Image (cartoon, rainbow, N blue to C red; front, side, top):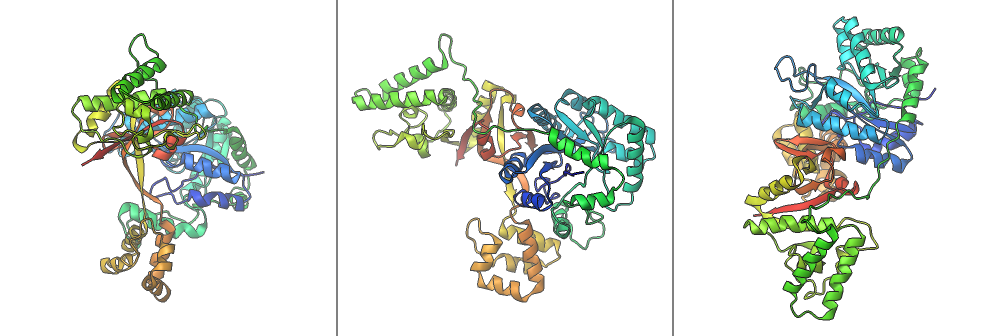
Length: 553
């Protein structure tokens, strides 16, 4: 029969999902399964990390998202009507599906945000190609109508989704977590399937890896909602069944629908997204009429060389020609031109610019173009530290700008390449050792003084883990060994340590793309700033042009 989990929430369903990507693939192998999906709530933050972890483990990754669908149009924002959104699982069948999912998830944030990032049926219709849809959990539109005893409405909505996504691309989900409302919903879903011929699929809405992780995930929810575990009126999962189950456990819940299990395997076979890393997608710098990128680049180098080195020895010119050759062969001419242009703009606008930091100062081309102000020949700096023809990696100029006016540089780049071609980059705040203890202490009802005392026993070493802290702090280890309450506090904190807690905007990272940014990566919104959902490292791996536009006080 076979079975594949197609509805799974990783730690990137922030403070809700607790399936740790780093441990997930071992669990999948332990279950004897060979594929798994990622379907975080409204975001694609973890897709690339998930993809790489799965590939490294020999597991097939299925890229997806559980999106929120507005009850009306995504532009409608009437309180009491539009603030509840329906869930819908979308899985990428192809790279076209991935690109379309990026569009849906991005526009849900940039155009449809109202409490949550929301798509609508019109947006789904526009970008349905390459996507497979599942009707989701009790919060899906079909289950919600069934719970309201609106069978015809549920059936009509299901048929409309089937029409939007195309024949064979919409599936009705069956779930059983021991929740009372799921019984009538499953009966209604199966009746819709019988009457319409729409296919069924079995899922388990996994939020954690093993049953015993339920308590840890409960603490995570309390961190999110600011509640304590003994608060009766808090948001909580009704049962402890939201974990990655074996095929045998799932078959015991649904003995009469073998086709719903077979469909999970068929969907997994159909989903074939393959990311290509380190293949660059650089924007083209608009050069003056009569020039190509190459000839304009060489002109700037020659003019700058004449200015910087009026009486230069022959080896200086040889170094310049060598660098120009390497930059040209490796395809980084436009990169140099783009950086030259925004630094030129800043200097001409009276915005203080740093002299250049790091390995970029080793380039005579950068010095001649006034990208840097450090003479690499004077200090015998080695160009290959910045750009090595033997190693394929994007060069990276670290440029400092005045704190008050850095935004003007980003505004200039945005005007030049188009608002949809420029975005800032997200970064994640994670639960560090001391922070995890403080979060968990509050949730478990420790007094502030108790929690503070334990947290302060963790050494202040940068990036220290609780495991390391227990080895290096004898007082912490003593409390852990002798006091069961402290042991519970630290063990729970260990289980949450390192999880992403929140997103923010990277202090320096800006991405500039040849096509609109959301053609390559999903976007979200941090306050009024549009940011990529992937971090600096992932942006680089995907071959996108990332600028370090740092500020200095």
